[in-house]
Length: 166
Image (tube, rainbow, N blue to C red; front, side, top):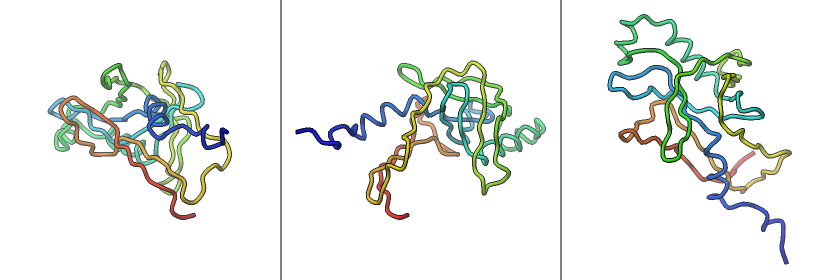
């Protein structure tokens, strides 16, 4: 006899379905040719819209106002916004021009919604309702600021944990 638990995908299956929607965000290129990763975004609803954090867009604003010499002091050769799209074997970096669609006013409202015309990322399907309770397994996935790349290989950090408090 099948139960509701039989309908729940495994962590591995869920991870495989989520990863294509999660993208690394970089502002600037380091002198060694590696992108300056500052955070994570994910596509939602429509593939041209993606969510990230206010602090990511704020850092982008800070770098966009820097002179070439100030960027060089930070070890950067430019301050362009880049995202990496998942290819068959790796992520491929692409310069983009994002339009800020919605942004929180401060770190207290740590959200920013960008729109990138022509972005082709599958939207993340978010669960409806409150299906999480104490002890539920959850996964965290992303590309944190300061991520050290292993050569040209880029992989998201993935953490599996449980909801331990309310």
